[in-house]
Image (cartoon, rainbow, N blue to C red; front, top):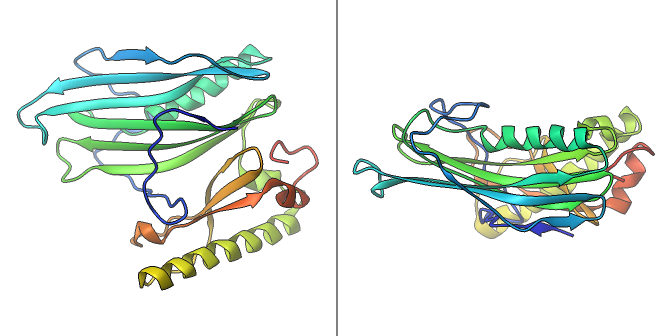
Length: 248
């Protein structure tokens, strides 16, 4: 089951991603603002052993020099209310907060963050997100998308490379996933008549009840529309993973 709040994905084929950053942005510390923003909270969501809510930070600053006459901050993200171990909730919330404030500006800016919880159960928390920022000195907005996967049993973030049963299974999975991604890229190239380079690495991933959705690794200077996502059935992916993996 997915738990969604104001997530507006970019329209790129399949579920493409746009990944970039700017030298004017700061990372990963939160940026001090001249006006205290308002914080709105949605109702608490219960997903078995874990409960969470969505917080929304809103702020507008009128400025005649801004492109639309004002600077706007609008960030929506999940906050863990409770899990079986309170230390896990604190650690996971710290991870989420770091993402929310990963990019920003030192003064006048537009900033946005939208998060979607794609899976939450007693073993695993998975979310995907998109963020946008535009500092006053930037000619256009910048944006990125990403994902956070967290093992609630081990109290640690999950990286895909550590979940395979051995190196041979990691290599076999990578080859299979790249084949699927390049099939999607080739289909898009034919349809759009774009010259898209082949995927050479795996990018972000997030988990749903039945699938692991994995993206191609962004290629520097390549058109973002050439990036791809494919959904792999978890039952099929399980053969590559350790018996104790939370991704099974």
